[in-house]
Image (cartoon, rainbow, N blue to C red; front, side, top):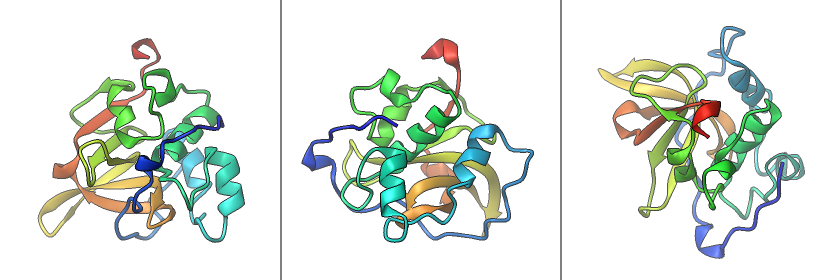
Length: 169
Protein backbone atom coordinates (compact mmCIF):
# COMPACT_ATOMS: atom_id res chain seq x y z
CA UNK A 1 0.00 0.00 0.00
CA UNK A 2 1.17 3.51 -0.70
CA UNK A 3 2.28 5.73 2.18
CA UNK A 4 0.18 8.89 2.43
CA UNK A 5 0.90 12.16 4.14
CA UNK A 6 -2.06 13.61 5.94
CA UNK A 7 -2.39 17.07 7.43
CA UNK A 8 -2.80 16.95 11.21
CA UNK A 9 -6.30 18.47 11.05
CA UNK A 10 -7.50 15.10 9.70
CA UNK A 11 -6.58 13.29 12.96
CA UNK A 12 -9.73 12.94 15.03
CA UNK A 13 -11.64 10.38 17.04
CA UNK A 14 -12.26 6.87 15.74
CA UNK A 15 -14.99 5.83 13.29
CA UNK A 16 -17.42 3.06 14.07
CA UNK A 17 -20.23 1.62 16.16
CA UNK A 18 -20.95 -1.55 18.10
CA UNK A 19 -19.71 -4.81 16.61
CA UNK A 20 -21.66 -8.02 15.97
CA UNK A 21 -21.13 -11.72 15.32
CA UNK A 22 -18.78 -12.34 12.41
CA UNK A 23 -20.67 -15.35 11.02
CA UNK A 24 -22.16 -13.21 8.23
CA UNK A 25 -19.27 -13.69 5.77
CA UNK A 26 -19.42 -16.62 3.38
CA UNK A 27 -17.88 -17.58 0.05
CA UNK A 28 -20.90 -16.09 -1.76
CA UNK A 29 -19.49 -12.61 -1.17
CA UNK A 30 -17.26 -10.81 -3.69
CA UNK A 31 -13.50 -11.00 -3.41
CA UNK A 32 -13.08 -7.61 -1.71
CA UNK A 33 -15.32 -8.78 1.15
CA UNK A 34 -13.42 -12.05 1.51
CA UNK A 35 -10.12 -10.15 1.43
CA UNK A 36 -11.27 -7.55 3.99
CA UNK A 37 -12.64 -10.30 6.22
CA UNK A 38 -9.20 -11.95 6.36
CA UNK A 39 -8.21 -9.04 8.64
CA UNK A 40 -11.22 -9.42 10.93
CA UNK A 41 -10.26 -8.81 14.53
CA UNK A 42 -7.07 -6.89 13.80
CA UNK A 43 -6.98 -3.97 16.21
CA UNK A 44 -4.93 -0.84 16.59
CA UNK A 45 -3.43 -2.10 19.83
CA UNK A 46 -2.71 -5.76 19.06
CA UNK A 47 -1.88 -5.47 15.35
CA UNK A 48 -0.53 -1.92 15.12
CA UNK A 49 2.58 -2.74 13.06
CA UNK A 50 0.74 -5.11 10.72
CA UNK A 51 -2.04 -2.59 10.18
CA UNK A 52 0.47 0.17 9.51
CA UNK A 53 2.15 -2.03 6.91
CA UNK A 54 -1.22 -2.82 5.33
CA UNK A 55 -2.79 0.65 5.29
CA UNK A 56 0.32 2.84 5.03
CA UNK A 57 -0.40 4.99 8.10
CA UNK A 58 -0.07 4.55 11.86
CA UNK A 59 -3.60 3.41 12.86
CA UNK A 60 -3.23 4.84 16.35
CA UNK A 61 -2.40 8.32 15.06
CA UNK A 62 -4.44 8.54 11.82
CA UNK A 63 -8.07 7.70 11.08
CA UNK A 64 -7.73 4.64 8.84
CA UNK A 65 -11.15 3.50 7.62
CA UNK A 66 -10.51 4.84 4.08
CA UNK A 67 -6.91 3.58 4.11
CA UNK A 68 -8.22 0.10 4.93
CA UNK A 69 -10.75 0.14 2.09
CA UNK A 70 -8.05 1.38 -0.31
CA UNK A 71 -5.62 -1.33 0.86
CA UNK A 72 -8.19 -4.09 0.30
CA UNK A 73 -9.08 -2.74 -3.13
CA UNK A 74 -5.38 -2.61 -4.04
CA UNK A 75 -4.89 -6.22 -2.91
CA UNK A 76 -7.68 -7.24 -5.25
CA UNK A 77 -6.27 -5.30 -8.21
CA UNK A 78 -8.94 -2.61 -8.03
CA UNK A 79 -8.29 1.12 -8.18
CA UNK A 80 -8.84 3.06 -4.98
CA UNK A 81 -9.96 6.55 -4.13
CA UNK A 82 -6.42 7.84 -4.75
CA UNK A 83 -7.30 7.70 -8.47
CA UNK A 84 -10.13 10.23 -8.04
CA UNK A 85 -9.19 12.34 -5.02
CA UNK A 86 -6.21 14.28 -3.68
CA UNK A 87 -7.34 13.19 -0.19
CA UNK A 88 -7.64 9.36 -0.37
CA UNK A 89 -7.40 8.99 3.41
CA UNK A 90 -10.74 10.71 3.88
CA UNK A 91 -13.85 8.57 3.83
CA UNK A 92 -15.65 11.07 1.64
CA UNK A 93 -13.01 10.62 -1.08
CA UNK A 94 -15.04 7.55 -2.01
CA UNK A 95 -17.97 9.78 -2.98
CA UNK A 96 -16.01 10.42 -6.19
CA UNK A 97 -15.04 6.76 -6.68
CA UNK A 98 -16.83 4.15 -8.75
CA UNK A 99 -20.45 4.43 -9.76
CA UNK A 100 -23.22 5.70 -7.46
CA UNK A 101 -26.03 3.18 -6.87
CA UNK A 102 -29.23 3.38 -4.85
CA UNK A 103 -29.50 -0.22 -3.65
CA UNK A 104 -26.34 -1.80 -2.21
CA UNK A 105 -24.96 -5.20 -3.09
CA UNK A 106 -22.33 -7.13 -1.18
CA UNK A 107 -18.94 -5.55 -1.82
CA UNK A 108 -20.24 -2.05 -2.51
CA UNK A 109 -18.66 0.80 -0.57
CA UNK A 110 -20.89 2.85 1.71
CA UNK A 111 -20.01 6.32 2.98
CA UNK A 112 -21.48 7.70 6.20
CA UNK A 113 -21.22 11.18 7.71
CA UNK A 114 -19.32 11.83 10.93
CA UNK A 115 -18.38 14.98 12.79
CA UNK A 116 -17.32 17.93 10.64
CA UNK A 117 -18.65 18.26 7.05
CA UNK A 118 -15.42 16.86 5.53
CA UNK A 119 -15.37 13.85 7.87
CA UNK A 120 -17.00 10.49 7.38
CA UNK A 121 -16.73 6.76 7.71
CA UNK A 122 -16.45 4.21 4.92
CA UNK A 123 -16.62 0.44 4.66
CA UNK A 124 -17.81 -2.51 2.61
CA UNK A 125 -21.52 -3.36 2.53
CA UNK A 126 -22.28 -6.96 3.49
CA UNK A 127 -26.07 -7.11 3.92
CA UNK A 128 -29.13 -5.34 5.30
CA UNK A 129 -30.86 -6.33 8.54
CA UNK A 130 -34.01 -4.86 10.01
CA UNK A 131 -33.37 -3.93 13.66
CA UNK A 132 -36.33 -2.62 15.68
CA UNK A 133 -38.15 -1.95 12.41
CA UNK A 134 -35.26 0.08 10.96
CA UNK A 135 -33.08 -1.07 8.02
CA UNK A 136 -29.42 -1.28 9.03
CA UNK A 137 -26.43 -1.98 6.82
CA UNK A 138 -23.89 -4.49 8.05
CA UNK A 139 -20.53 -2.89 7.22
CA UNK A 140 -17.18 -4.64 7.16
CA UNK A 141 -14.52 -2.05 7.70
CA UNK A 142 -11.45 -0.78 9.44
CA UNK A 143 -11.34 1.67 12.33
CA UNK A 144 -14.70 0.50 13.61
CA UNK A 145 -14.11 0.57 17.37
CA UNK A 146 -10.39 0.77 16.54
CA UNK A 147 -10.39 -2.58 14.71
CA UNK A 148 -11.45 -4.43 11.59
CA UNK A 149 -14.92 -5.73 12.30
CA UNK A 150 -18.55 -5.98 11.28
CA UNK A 151 -20.82 -3.19 12.53
CA UNK A 152 -24.41 -2.15 11.89
CA UNK A 153 -25.16 1.40 10.70
CA UNK A 154 -28.66 2.77 10.04
CA UNK A 155 -29.22 2.68 6.28
CA UNK A 156 -30.82 6.12 6.44
CA UNK A 157 -27.46 7.62 7.45
CA UNK A 158 -25.67 6.47 4.29
CA UNK A 159 -24.73 9.48 2.17
CA UNK A 160 -23.36 7.50 -0.77
CA UNK A 161 -23.29 3.93 -2.01
CA UNK A 162 -20.57 3.25 -4.57
CA UNK A 163 -19.94 0.27 -6.80
CA UNK A 164 -16.63 -0.58 -8.43
CA UNK A 165 -16.68 0.36 -12.09
CA UNK A 166 -13.26 0.55 -13.81
CA UNK A 167 -14.67 2.68 -16.62
CA UNK A 168 -15.84 5.36 -14.15
CA UNK A 169 -12.40 5.77 -12.56
